[in-house]
Length: 162
Image 1 (cartoon, one colour):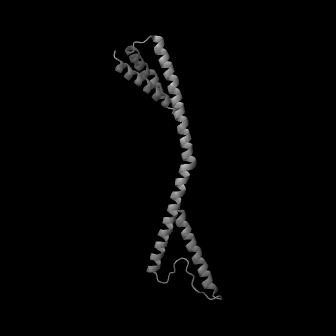
Image 2 (cartoon, one colour; image 1 turned 180 degrees about the horizontal axis):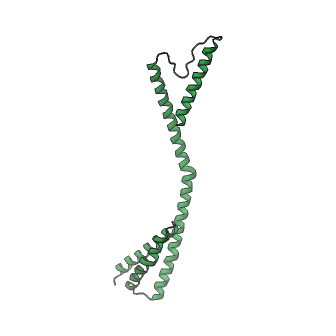
Image 3 (cartoon, helix red, strand yellow; image 1 turned 30 degrees about the vertical axis):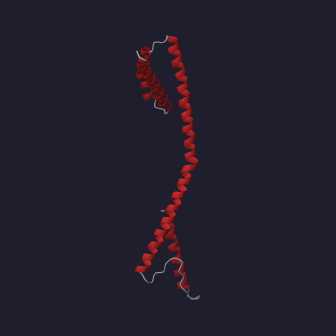
């Protein structure tokens, strides 16, 4: 047969073996075994028939490819695990912090807007930070002011936590 057919069949053998190694590494034993027992033997036989080399040369070429591809798959998985670890330890926490800060800023702005709208609808209601003058001896008014501030703080914390 011509060299193009042999080259194409060889590339198919290499591709199937690599895929089988990846599937095995991913823990997908059934899919890996299907390639190993069904597809790979037929593909190797087709390549071997198209290749006019001595059987020992073919065997050596296959053995070399098996070892080389297994190393490539292991190297790829090592890189994958390192990249995943970096994402887990660095990238995701950074993105999470930035997103959290943006959400808190948006919640504060939304709360301030709602406070302003509420104050506009109820003229007697005072926005946060406003402290009315209360006589020192007006204990009920002081208690009301403290309770109102605690409720406002609780509501703000609830909105920020949500």
